[in-house]
Amino acid sequence: MTPTIRLRQRMQVVLHMVMAFVVAILMAQLWLFTVTLEAMESHDASLSIIAAALVCSLLGCVAIWALIRYFLRAEAQQQNQNG
Amino acid sequence: MSNLPDDPQGTPRWKQDFPVPSGEDSYATRREFTKFLGLTSVAFLAGTVVAAARKLWKQARASQSDSVAIATLEEIPAGGSKLFRYPTQDDACILLRLAPDKFVAFNQNCTHLNCPVHFDEANSRLACPCHHGFFSAEDGQAVAGPPRRGLAALTVSVRDGQVWVQNQLTREPS
View: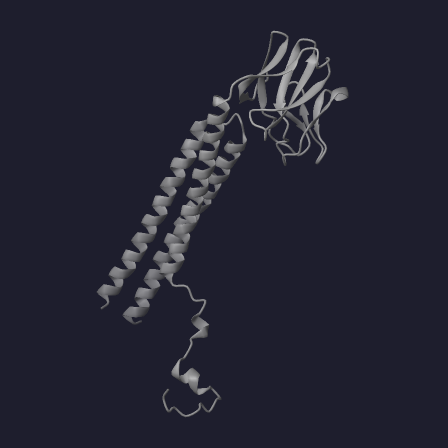
């Protein structure tokens, strides 16, 4: 097995893990969006629900970009190590 | 233009000079794909922010609007109703006189798909003719049909022989 193929396989595993995290976070963000929409339509919904949904969605977004950054950096490092 | 001979398979000379990898036209790199996922996340966040801002704006607008007189006591008999607009001309509402001394007012838009609801005096409920949704005339709660949320209730008071609606939408009718 050549180093290039090994690298590609390793990156594939990392990519799958990152994708699983990212998809889970995206699903959570979608759910938070629907919660906020429901609260927007409902007259008795508390503002604290909306604030919590907003903060969680922001954290999710930051987490996704951090994961992507981690993945791309790991990929670049591996490529550099293999010349 | 080079002087390449024509391909034996019939590839034209221009294509040999400027090969277009059409098979890779729709190929997305990992970087592009992850960027797409990141932007999807930003879109969800933006949607949440917009929805939250709209909720805040609605609340601010409701708290700023003053109470207004919408009818005189003689105008509506017991069991009667009157349509009015509050707090803006775009917000249709309905005032009900359930008893000589009992008034309630609700936003007239059905919480299912915004059709206007009408007072069904015989059954003491508000009916939406579009999809047969029904709301209690007492408190505006959804009692049958597709709507899941109750109608927004306005605070109603009677002063100087007139019926006034207050500045905010509440779930509990006055």
